[in-house]
Length: 219
Image (cartoon, rainbow, N blue to C red; front, side, top):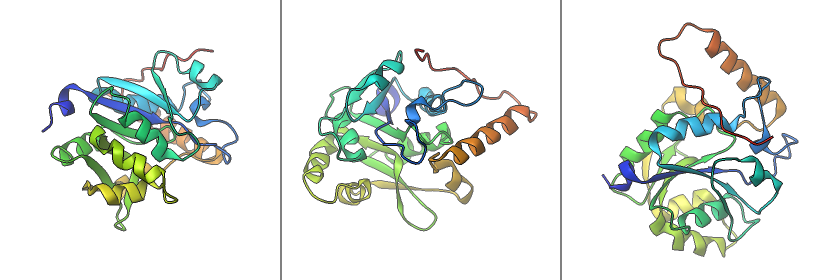
């Protein structure tokens, strides 16, 4: 296993979408309790990462609300999520990066750890869905793939799936019960459903449970 997998993994939370269906930037979403939805993403990354940062397309007022976490801006904005990936890979912060979207609050630490294991001797690792499609995020990508990402950004097909096919990654199979864990929260109704799930978990008898640390957001 690469040394970076235990001593220098950086978690990158991609937050560059327009959120047209949600109606508000997903970085700003809070549950009715006041807890930011993206806190769940941070919680899944924290046990595996020495650092966590947010990726945004351009500098806006939003970055001022991510208090306590570094923010990296796309070097080539408005080119989709691959631009955020490329900017992180070129940042020089680390060699190994775990990418998760800000609207994937169900992703678990165990799933992310599986990417580190499967991708221990490769430059990238992605999940493969039950119907054999490569899942763009979450994913493990190492900095040596920055030139590939930059080259693809200069083409018409700038999709993460094309990037994944081009870099010949290791693939981790998604179990059927995990399929819903990678789904995004894209609409107000889906946010309500996610909150209902969390309320059900919190009211159910548990053992040790999850430590619900809150991101230090600025008001």
